Length: 149
Image (cartoon, rainbow, N blue to C red; front, side, top):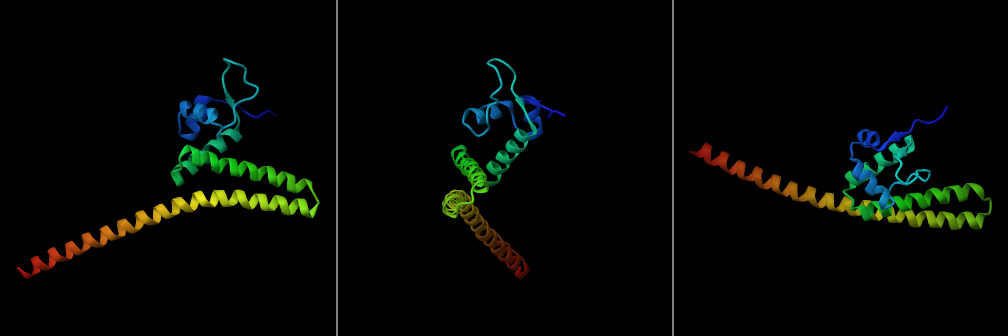
């Protein structure tokens, strides 16, 4: 049974994005281009492309990443996938140790991006908490003035 292939408009609809965004993501390497697509022919996508695009959009929106940062995150994940394959194919403990060290470096890259966004969100939260306290304080002042009158 062959996998159903989707056209770019269907992929865009399923993922809540636009064909233009999909083409751009292909152009900058976030999405793989269809290698068997001939020049001028329609792009066709598989379920794995739907999942990958959904994950890209989720990460972009959740972490508010620039496209460069998103590319770094995706590249680190792809490198880790390659490392996992190599790790499964070798029994040599020295080679496995090197692969695990490489995996840690990629995870550190990903954590740096995520933690940077987390710090920004924490700063925003603190600013909003401060504003909330200030407004509540003013409300209390008005209520006490009103009660005294």
